[in-house]
Amino acid sequence: MKETAPPKIRIKQELLSQLEEVPYKKITMKNLAESLGMTRGNLYKHYSSKDEIILAIIQERLDLVFDLLESMEMASDVVNRHALLRQCSQVLLANKKMVCAVMAIDAEDLVFEHLKSFFARILGNIARINEIQIKDRDYFKLIVLHISGSGFNVVKGWALNGMKAPAEQVAILCDDIINESILDKLRFCDTGA
Image (cartoon, rainbow, N blue to C red):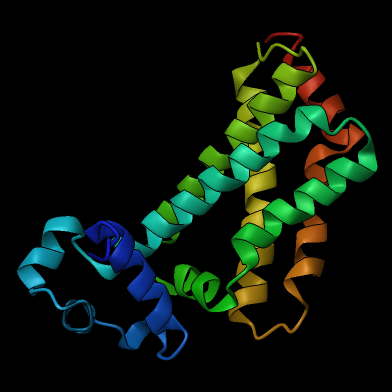
């Protein structure tokens, strides 16, 4: 007896598989249901739209990256931290078609909110590791907004403007997240408002 993956996993895998063959705009819930051998009604029990499916995939990837970054505590030298960050960035950028699909959906605000939440988690973790207390929440939010906006616009430009730079090079741009400069910025949050 062959074990099959739960429906939500199969649905996400099918969407990613179709992205390899078809532009995101041409993928429909009807096609997804048919290729999965389920009714549209059953598909809609799990996800209300293909945008919801792709956002779930992104959230999973962000969670995976955060888990990898949590292991950064063990990577004490800068070279290992940078290598780890590049590895994490590549998790997000591994499938340019998926990144293009995410950037092309009519949910830019929602995607950006996911990204801000992700960077707030990362920066909070970096602050904790370095024994920095976040007392000035407003300044912390500005740091998160700065990094999120920069990252979002770089990735969006790379994905949607036909830029041919490898994902590896795009990932290098994210190295600023863990350099000494970000620690200096986070230390300002420790002074309180």
